Image (cartoon, rainbow, N blue to C red; front, side):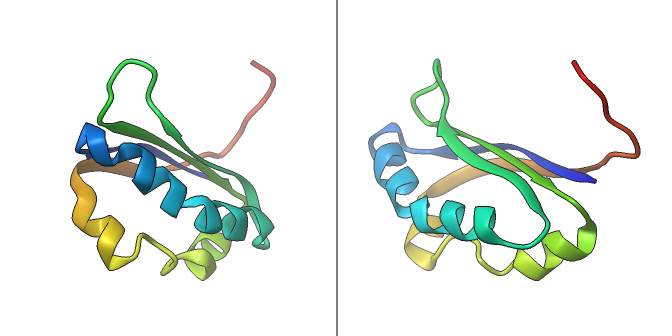
Length: 94
């Protein structure tokens, strides 16, 4: 299993527009084979931060979906980012 997690920084005035522009990508990801979860969301305390969370069955499933990143207009809104892949060998109830 692979978890992709992190954050994007955008101008606080652009955050809502950025997220609205991502709704199609979220729907597409969730419908993709091997996607277990996919979410982008506004941070509760930082007006310019977008939290990223994805969970995939395999690297192959993630790579098959990749390429569906932000379009050029959205990419121009990103001021900074830290999004990493985590390779999970085991999981269980929290």
